[in-house]
Image (cartoon, rainbow, N blue to C red; front, side, top):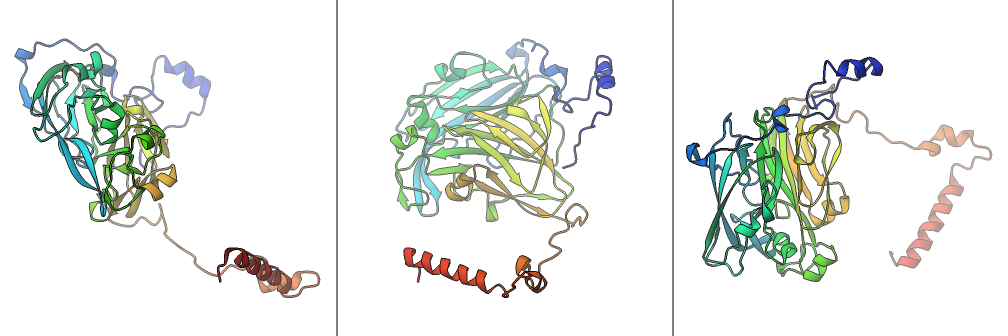
Length: 397
């Protein structure tokens, strides 16, 4: 939590000065990544560009920054795999995936790049699939050009015109079922000058899953269409599995570092109220775009949307990632962990300083000061009657 806004002292003076001295990017909702985010993208001749094979990010590892200042032809290869694997301990599910993971691999390119996308549908699969990338300007986001039967592959290309963090997903009918089975991921289009440097980057997506059995019910669980239509998920998960980001799988950092989360919401139905317990987002690239807001406690990410959240970590300990619609977190699985090691900072956070008995109105001095003090006997007697009456109804004895 190190990035802070300058609080205006004289609003009128600042308003007058703003014409000649605009505020720094990201401090008051301005473009955080420079004016290039709004300038037109020059058309390119793909034949003249250097060719790069995309280095994909496998969740929770983010794809690395491009570290380029000029366009390239970026070749992206995604294979569709239908795989049965655990959704929770003892519970299995037939996931439809890009690349065998939920979410699919993170793609990272630069604004102005010419992207050549190859979609391969594995011969063992049972369904046709395609891909709709929200970063594509064109019919169906590429879906109309990528309908691919099992054992086939398709290809189309596009120029990345807009910087931001975008969801991609399967758009084959029934679309909600394909997305609900795990067919989504993120494509990041860096602005011309890239994003501000941080120490660690991670890739996390939330999704809601609709199984016939309830949360953690054992065995192979089929997809439940009626449950999906009713928007009643059995699971709400980070990275496609109950416990995907806890225990030995927790994200890690050290005190003094800045952490960036590329966070997306595959849906298909629910909006995420994303929050990290014990942290404040110093910088949020709102809705995955180029406008920054500062000092945010919880950010709303709709189905099919994304955001970047940056925050510094000053205090060691375990920080819990949640959908702050908390029944989803603690009863349906939308929980993860960030484990921070390093030195304590007792000024930022002291830890527990006092743990002692508190008697309130039942402290001896308070009881003695009461008119007709009976030592609290009447109150205790009333409590006993309430307890006995409750237990008689609930058969708790």
